[in-house]
Length: 111
Image (cartoon, rainbow, N blue to C red):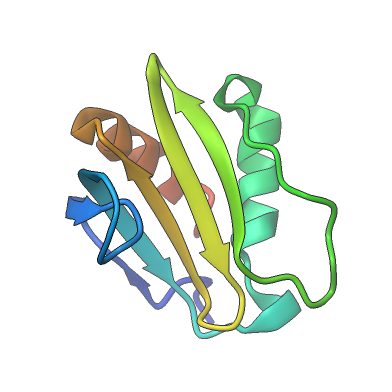
């Protein structure tokens, strides 16, 4: 089974989906739920390879959900958010080029 069943292209979106600052984002959806969801593992591996991104996740909790972290990519700020119940990873920034570049690098970890 592939880790992600749908990886969206970057598109215009408010930060929180339907509200918040205008910007750019994309979702990565998986059919794996709860502690099987790959979001944390991918972000942790990404963070080891790219410490400059500054992704800091809270300590793991078996029942975690609604996890968010600020990140840096180049000179831009990004917002990284995932849910394990609805099982999606959301990356957002007001800088489209940063989101596009971050997405391209993150996809290497999603296969």
